[in-house]
Length: 108
Image 1 (cartoon, rainbow, N blue to C red):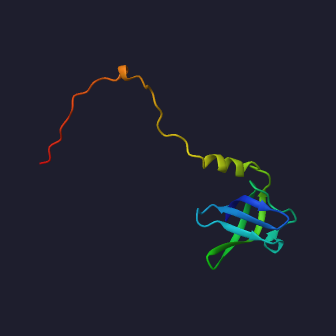
Image 2: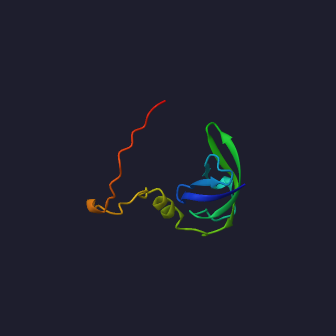
Image 3: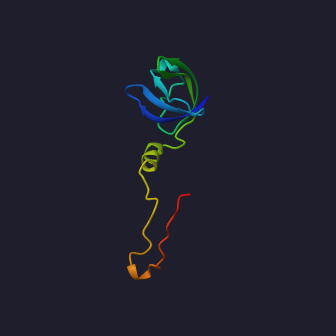
């Protein structure tokens, strides 16, 4: 499976991986589950296998396919999470409003 590193902590040897199947995130712990010498960083594209352990998806045999592909990924994801206004006020001038007749709906 292909995944992207969302978060990584090199000293603690932990990382969180988004997986291409859009299912649960995968958790990488320790170099025993890493193929290669370099610890993956946020934004790296990886190939992995996984194992369901309890309620967690644990990453196994993680191989970096493309390093430093999007190293600013965590910041981009944080920005995307900020709500954007859906509506905006066009005019506050009451005189521009067009009077409309009242409508009465009848149930029938």
